[in-house]
Length: 103
Image (tube, rainbow, N blue to C red; front, side, top):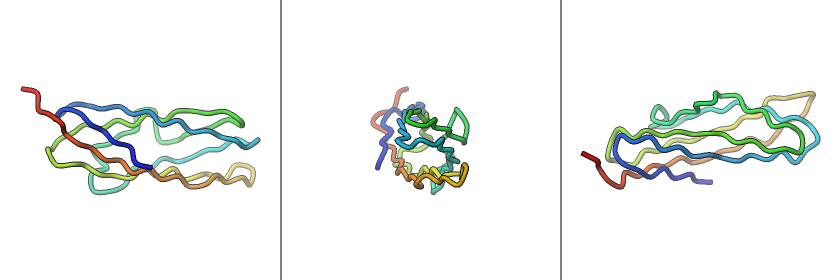
């Protein structure tokens, strides 16, 4: 899955990812940003994501462009074992594109 962040140079673009938990057990994930431009992306709500059974939750990812070149990173969601239940590791490719420059 690729999430694209498009905006002006030095602007902050916010994206929301919706995660669903179809199981009857709580899932807990540690979110990690890795890659060449990982420092340009952030998780303002923190790096731990908890999804209650049969519910859904959202993760907010922010990107602030510093350069004209496209930025790339990967968001990894690694499951923590809860009562012997592990969720699948999720990966999202994060890419940016600067469309314009505001004076």
